[in-house]
Every structure is written in structure tokens, then in C-alpha cells.
Image (cartoon, rainbow, N blue to C red; front, side, top):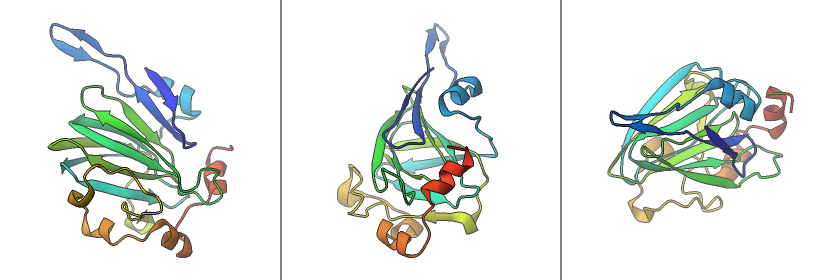
Length: 196
């Protein structure tokens, strides 16, 4: 498995090795020894989520309070998505910036998003199935969102006016409003999680 660190500290892409034969393909989509060598710690798995979305659907920008936060290892099992990591940690050198990776069911690549980072994706194919390995279970009182169409963040959604949002995401505050409301995690809290 290959890996590369994204432009946002605390996020990586993992690209598995495909082993095809006349039966199909075998690959390791997650391997703790590789993951922990790259990231510096194991993924403490507490929950797995699956979402199915139609083309143009945008989910996010979602994040959870630190501590404990919620790290995610995200893969696309069917179709194609544009997966985006947004740095929303106050005091981070890359605060307000983002990086994007196209996840596909052909490549079977994954993105790891550590605690305190914002996460969003857009369905690029007619139907997509996305899976998330999560370090913490869903806890509504700790979960927050930032409006995915916030012009100050300017995420590169391909569908423009055809974007499909949930009512909750459509009513989420902008990054600036979330900061004013005291919702955003601090970079120092993220650093303290793993002694960085």
C-alpha cells in the first residue's frame, strides 16, 4: 500500500496494491501496520458508516468536538466521489484551506481525516456508496457542520446550482459564523491528542 500526506496536516491518502487474477481482484483496503507507520498511531475503530448518494449530493462539511473528536478512514465502494478535507482548527497554519482527492471504486483508494478536521464529499457518478471507519461513534451533541457552499472556503464542487444538500447542511453556519459561535476545534487540542 502506498500513501501520501495531503496539504492539510493530519490527512493522508492511501492507495492499495491491486492483485488481479482470473477470479477478479484482491487488495488490502486497510492495514493497521501500514496505517500506524504512516500516521503515527493506530486507528481505534468504534463505528463504520455507509452512505449511498445520488449524483450532485454534497455531504458535509462535518466535524466533531475535541476531545474526543472523530477520525475517519473514508473509501468509495461504488462510483466516484470528490472527497475534501478542510482545516477548521483555530491556530493551524493552514486554517481555512482544503485539499481534495477523487475516491473511486476502481482505484479503491482511501483518505484518512484526523480529529478536528472538516470532511465533505460530492457524488460524481449516478450513485455512490461511501464507507467510513470511525474512531468514535456518532454523538449528536458533539457533531457540527459548516455550510459546504461557504464562498470564503470556495470548495470546488462540480455541480454548481445542481448541488443537493440535506436540510441540516443547508442551514449550517459559515466558517466565520462557526468561529464566532465557538464551535471550531483548536489546533492545540488536536496536537495534544497525539503529543505533537
